[in-house]
Length: 385
Image (cartoon, rainbow, N blue to C red):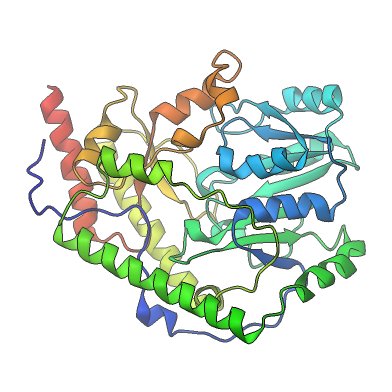
């Protein structure tokens, strides 16, 4: 193992940039199709309620999914049927058709895993079920495929989680396809009216954002000076045990941080370019170490969340974390118990959960961080020889 004394941490999420926060704080004209929530899971449940999908109805969900996203749906009274994903992390369409018809499903959730485009176009064209609500999950990267900035064309609704790409305290978003569902406009307007803030709430929201920035500044100092390993197993276990699953389903006003980041096309263009640059650089150098990128092709407007590789040894993830690299697995400990307990039914979901290595490529990753990541992986390979 590398010498860890005062070795900086390579963080798994981007740091706030005070300079970028000053780029734009204006509030754009209200988008009729967009409603903000604290978390993506709140947006999902609110969308199901908005479409008046009856309680006890069945929803088809990829088994490769985090439990915190679907638990509110189960708690509310909906039924979930898991379907395994294929080697490209997509639904097999024939199996999906069968599951929908057998269960009389009212909705399906199609996920663009890690920002890479799913086969939702093929699904929509093949199913031909007008009453089925199609939900597209963009939670892993709101920057991909212009889905956040453009009106929806294929799904009935889409879910976003801006916290996956932006250094913000919240960021769940529900977007409705108003071309297909214009009758929902009055309900959407009522939901938005409920987010009117009084002076006390405005002050509280501002304080929460400032507190978040201060916490991230402390994290930056700890990480940069290598005061301790924030990715040690002990700290990771503490974080996992304190995962927040609070049930706040009401819409909210976007924070001044979200307004600043999402209202600046200059900022979004800058971080998209940086992420793509990091992705391409790490992929190229990982190939020289003998690793093949998990996704061979990338659509034109894709902005990935991670650089993704398979580690069949099952050892590299722990080695990187022990050496202060913020590598991720997903959904990791959040994979539903039903999926873990039925490995024969969901082999791919379990395999990818245990063997995919997700290397950070966010906008705070610089050349020195890339070098740290690659040198650490090369060191691991040397130790295995």
